[in-house]
Image (cartoon, rainbow, N blue to C red):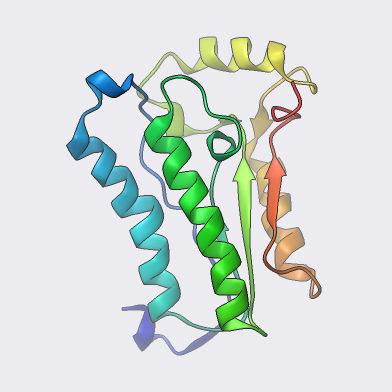
Length: 164
């Protein structure tokens, strides 16, 4: 489908499934594979089939750099997406390829859990004292679309989670 729409200036890939975490012993392999299908393989397919002239921005997450004890699958897919972004930046140059890695953000991604309790607990631990808002993460994507000298970079927008 993407190959039929012609050339585009920018591609931003933000698809994700409702996040679930579990200990390895309890991991639902079908759900884990679905996360990879959406987050990694979906991104790769979008990049392969879109004809992009200027920039590509993929989406990762803070789990890739600072996973919790139940985040093995999420950390792996985030790390793979970040590595994909760096490799594609080299291969597709001069098209710029970057990755945005948000921390916990107030969105529907957390709809299958008690999100308000999560937002409160996580927010208290962050250097900013709160979780992110979708508009703040959107600004990161806009920055990467506009910055003609940024490629191969992962932009972490996590409220200081990596440092907390």
